[in-house]
Image (tube, rainbow, N blue to C red; front, side):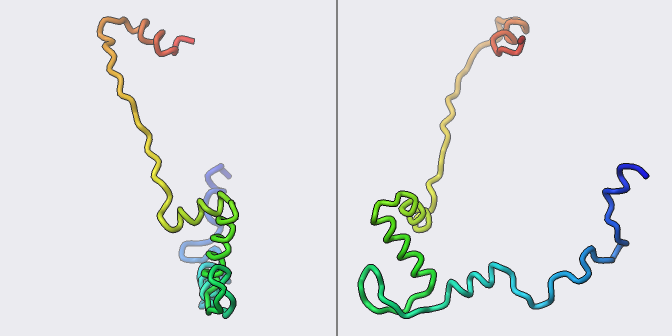
Length: 116
């Protein structure tokens, strides 16, 4: 038995590696999370003080706003990134032109520090 033998699946072509698998019609975590984030609840808006019907997502956003207003920098950053997108980081490259035509290969290697 070679090393390659244990890289192949133990089942035949057309046979499932997980025959019982996930039941048909079962919901994935994303679907369930979205459902519960959209559930509405009537309560007092912590910013306006009015009774309103809000989704769980609204409530969590308001809680994040409250934390940001209290000085939580991470909450502020999360809100800004959500509302306006994360800032794009650009790296400026400095271009340097060096004339190596008058150097020998050994001198270039020494300059690059590759002779160690």
